[in-house]
Image (cartoon, rainbow, N blue to C red; front, side, top):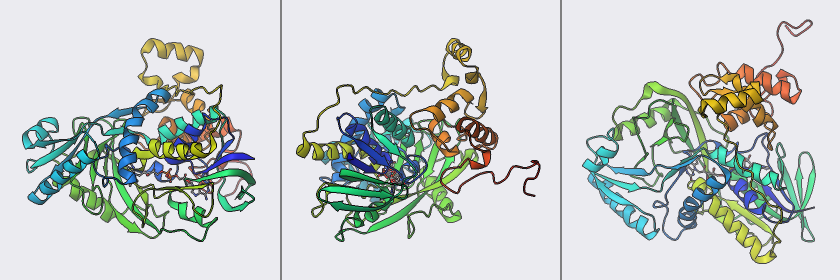
Length: 481
Ligand SMILES: Cc1cc2nc3c(=O)[nH]c(=O)nc-3n(C[C@H](O)[C@H](O)[C@H](O)COP(=O)(O)OP(=O)(O)OC[C@H]3O[C@@H](n4cnc5c(N)ncnc54)[C@H](O)[C@@H]3O)c2cc1C
């Protein structure tokens, strides 16, 4: 019997698990995918927005501003990469200028530090902004992070402090009898006093399992991106936004925490929450909108494209509430942008709402599990040599583009999350994120995973069930032809 079951291991579920790990209660996280952070949280702009953009007095505004502030301490505590690189929102015509001045007022209402800057100051800071720029809104608190890195760190810390995680456990039904929820997955049945529904694109489906009274509709909008290789640091220093429209924040330029640049996203309504297709039209749209704002965009450095789906609802704000007709069922739905930036504050709100009723006891032996942030190749040479002496596998480079060693990959497999897939390893330690996109290292990763997990290479998955990369061993006696 659990006290709390959290459904979903994206940024929302991970932050909730992290905060609840301090209490002396039994907490279980159920995730349908084979790895954590494989939903909306894996494919977005990775910006910790400052908070001037959401409508004043909305939950989005309140939680974005608070969440942005909270990221500083939490990333320091867990030793996760996070940088406040600031952002410029740009206006190129009279109409956009008027809109930007309104945004500045809105920023003041939301209590976000912002400054209006003219063309000269903007181009001094970001020389590749077009000469046609008229006005810019500078927000120094805008930050960047690798979303899955913080999820991995939060969940590793939660597991270290007693929270249980079961991946590949899709919740298929929930019943409530005499104040106890019976939560069914394809594999098992679990009992709990509280359910927290943090299931992203599928939040309404989970809520429908306990009530007929779901008062919102889900809408999905796809955002496509280009990824530019590392090594184009002189292109931009900060996040660049266009003036937002009623379709959203628009097509952005985002330096990533690992030195790449993202261009995107688009905003297209799709019917299917799994429709992450990348299209010629989408990519063309990105270029068109980037060229409106910037000179010298290093398109020659593009190494990948991808897309993510936003979980919007008809209520248009975050929905964070206990169901009126089902006590102890807390839904955390409609967590679209700025959901990543707001996640710590969303989790705090959930924590407070539980605590208000429960007066939960604190754990006496809570300890923080800090990320090692090994990154062997970036350490001083003496330390690299010392580590290689301890474990020669730290001296064997597997991913040449990102200089990732076999030792780092094995640490990821043996770590608290027990990573099993090629994409899981990529998110944890980055092999396959570089210029060759895994062309060189993927077969080696499969080999290491199979050896460490003691399974066949043909059992190794790219990400989810059914995504096996190898189908049959060649050159084996009696093997399939
Ligand atoms: C294109 C795009 C750009 C964005 N850019 C930004 C940005 O720059 N800054 C920002 O603040 N926000 C941004 N966002 C929003 C942000 O990514 C989301 O708000 C956030 O990732 C949502 O996290 P989540 O944990 O709520 O959902 P998810 O990450 O989707 O996690 C939900 C989890 O629940 C699991 N699940 C679903 N159903 C079940 C089930 N039945 N049983 C068990 N598990 C289940 C899923 O597999 C998933 O892992 C962007 C979003 C998109 C799509």
